[in-house]
Image 1: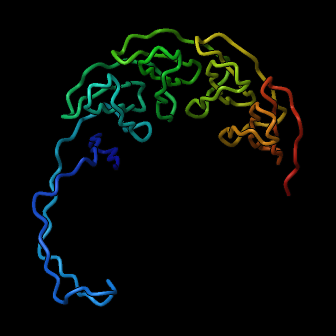
Image 2 (image 1 turned 180 degrees about the vertical axis):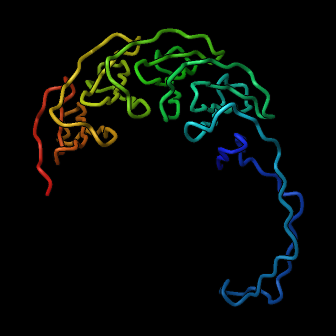
Length: 231
């Protein structure tokens, strides 16, 4: 994909190989390097393009939202518009989220009902939509969110948690958008969060970096376990 701000056109690189022919001059016996492969012709055409009203906010997400065997395309523009397109580039639904961050949506069955939900952040709000574009809930925070949500069952209780970082806070939400915990840092957060069970105790830790040269590790309850000062 690429973005052209001047014409505000967003191209999806779904390409169709209309002609691909080749000849092999030498017979391949035991080593592929012994053959001389000549490609006679390749023709590549765009299937479609979709025009945005502003430049694209981040890379698109391609997923079969309604589980019907055909993929949909989720794409955002910097002026706050959030689109769901079908596989032919037609708009299925859209929302004006205002002050949309430069983050891609996260698609997951967050409530474990067998259907996919879409989590996406505007500057001060986390939104949850169902696959038809209906907003199920939203959660507000007081700082600019910096990246796409991270999803994990932090405490292995069978329910998924939503982890977000803002300017100087790590936010953890329950699957329904209620606040689980928050952790405030002294320095500005400068990296995405990474989730892993570092000590193999059955619960996850959260790692991230800050502007004051710290790598910080939180436990699944949002309590700092350790920090490391980098040079």
